[in-house]
Image 1: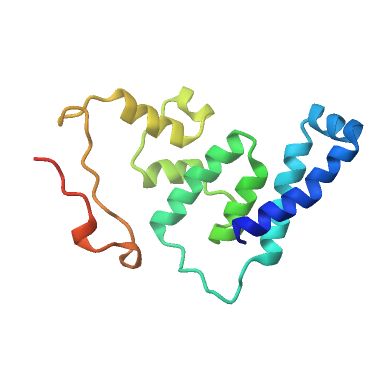
Image 2: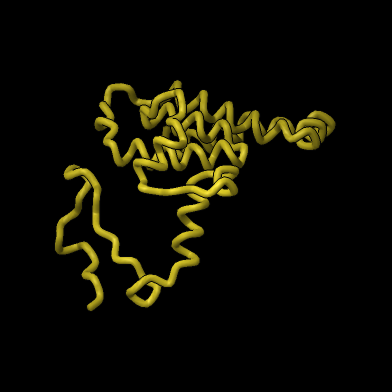
Length: 159
């Protein structure tokens, strides 16, 4: 779905709520308006999604990345955003087991870290570790071959 289509739809539907201020205020005060907007956007996306263009196969790396993002989205109550991610990416409907994710990422968790998404723990680790290279981590690409760029456009690591 193009951003223009989503914006036109959003303007058309939700700006009409301005003509009924009491309804808009009621929906906003109950925290429902944002959820309705997200759910309608997700349904419009599903209706307009171009099924003729096949998506690339879901790689193991993308499966893990999508699961980290979904865990974060659901923890923060961005359920409709998570549902669009799942639908658009081809991620399995059933979330991956947290212990499986930790094993795949070679992460050991303490009991307190299990109450938040793995992504928070990973971020905390990198923000709080000084490392051997002046606090910087040299990242290597693990992107599938179809996603790699011309080597001449990639940044060169500092010596």
